[in-house]
Length: 481
Image (cartoon, rainbow, N blue to C red; front, side, top):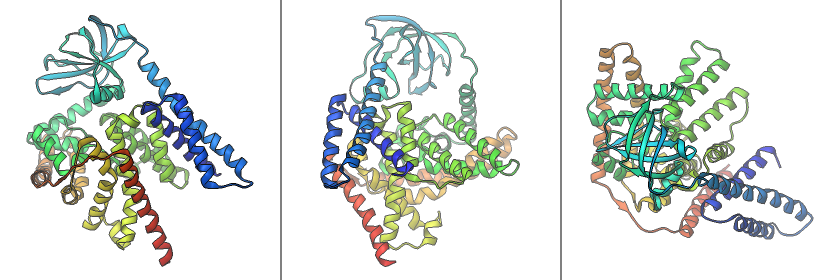
C-alpha cells in the first residue's frame, strides 16, 4: 500500500476512534467495534491466500481506532482531573480569551490560579471593561453547565460558569503576539464603526474577520432564515482570497521561497486575528498545504489534506469532532463542494469554461446547492430545519463577497494613512453591504423552511445516496470517453 494511503487510512481510523469515544463508548466497546468492523471487511473481501495480509492490515487499522479512543478518553480525564469546589471561592486568574459583550453583560473566560488553570466562564456587568491577558481576582460560586450548553463549554475547555461574581482588576497582561493582533483587530473594527452605519460595519467585520459581534438579533435571525450565516464564518472561500492576495503582494518584492514563508506567517496571524474558529483553522491548514505542495513541487491531494487538517485540529482539541457544530458544517460543506459539485457539473453537462468563471450564476448555483446538500442533515439535526430560499440568496450574494472583502482590507489599510481616503472607499463598500443586507432580509421574509426529524440511520442512507451520485457521475464520464 502506498505511503499516502497508509497515512489516510490510519488517520481516518484514528478519527473514527475519537468519534466513537466522544459518543460515550468505552475503550473495550471501541475495541469490540473494531473487531466487528474487521470481521465484516474480511467477509466482504472473501477467502483466499490474501487473508493473512488482510488480517494484518485490519489489525493495524483497528489499533488506530483503539488509539483514537484512548486519546479522547485520556484527554477527557485530564480535563476533569481538578474537582470543582462547592460554595464561594476567591481566586486570581488570567483572562485567556477576548471578552465578549452581550447586551447587558460581559463574558470572560478565566483560567483560575487556585484550580491549576481550570477555565470558567464568568458573566459580569459590561463595565468596567477588561481585556485579553488581564490578571483579575474573582469571587463567586462555580456552577456546572448542563445539556448542549455544557457540551459547548467543554469543547471550549471551560469546566463551569460563574453568574455575576465579583471581579477585581489586578494588572494588565504582558504584551504578546496574540494581544497585539487582538489590539489590531480592535482598531480595524473601530475603523469600520467610524466610517459605516452600525449594521453595515458589523457585517463588514464579519466578512473580513469573522463572527457576529455587533449584529442585531433581528439580523442574526435573518441570516439564519436565509441560509447565509456561513458568510461570516470564515471558510476556505475567504481564506483562499486572503492567501492569493497576500502571495501576489509578497512576490512583488520577495523571492518565491521568502514569499511562501511570509504568507505562511501571515495566514497564522490572520487565523489568530479572526478568532481561530474551526472553519478558519481548517481552511488555513489546507491553504498552507496547497502552498507547501506548490513550493515542494508535489501534487496536492485533497483527500489527505482534509484528513490532515481534521487530525491536527483533533490532536489539539479532540472534543471538536462531535461537539463543535462549526467544525462539522465546515468539513461537510467542503466535501460537498469538492466531490458533489463536480458530480453535478458532470450530470448536467456544465461546460468547463463556466466552471472557471467565478461570476457565472450556474457555477454559484451549483456550488451553493452542493454545499447545502452536504450540510442539510446536520442543519436539520441541530437546528430543526433548512430553508429552500438559501440557494437563490447565496447565488445573489456570493459573487460580491471577494470584492467586499477586498474593500474591507483596503479601508483598514488606508485608515492608518488617511482617514479621508478610507472614507471615500467606504462609500463604495456601503453600497455593496447595503445591497447584500437587503437581499438577506428579503429572502429571510420569503423563507421556505423544511423541518422534520432525521435520525442517524436516515443520515447514513442520505450520505450513501450522495456517494452513489458521485460514483455514478464518474462512471457516466468514463462510458462517454
